[in-house]
Length: 209
Image 1 (tube, helix red, strand yellow):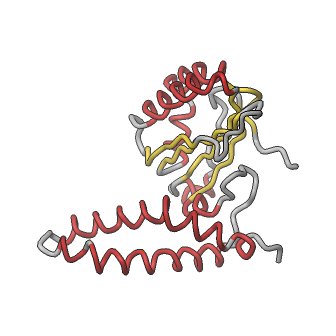
Image 2 (image 1 turned 30 degrees about the vertical axis):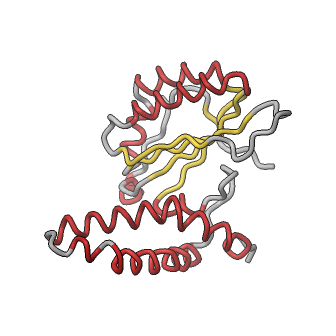
């Protein structure tokens, strides 16, 4: 199995984006982190991670974060695999968080409760929706497949919202009305529609061509 990039300390050496990649640096970027935790340390680990997630919220460009517990917890499990998501609106804002004293502080609170080194994978734009749910190493599917599945999810989601929510907002001004609809679309796609579509269509999305 390929070994994903590993970090075990604050990212003081995050390389700057090359000049030719200036446009890419403006794209939203999501960091997926996998950590193994001893069952006896779960409560302390979760408390420390919640502290880190809360600290990240105060940084410019922060789009969200989430701690995802193991899908299945067996009584005989020696370690439990946790996943953590951090999302920022650009590489520059992500780098500012990764090199911050706040992150360094909370990382030191997290480390005593984990086993081994963390596994880190970065994705940009909509690629987060199409990352394999239990892996930090699988590459995103081809762009044309991403576009197809994204449309397949967005079309019924937007249609449903226009039939149900939009009439309730008819008396609102255009900008707040669009703001609410688009926020709902992103939330529903991220936590409801996209995970199911990518699971159902996984063989096709990741088929070798």
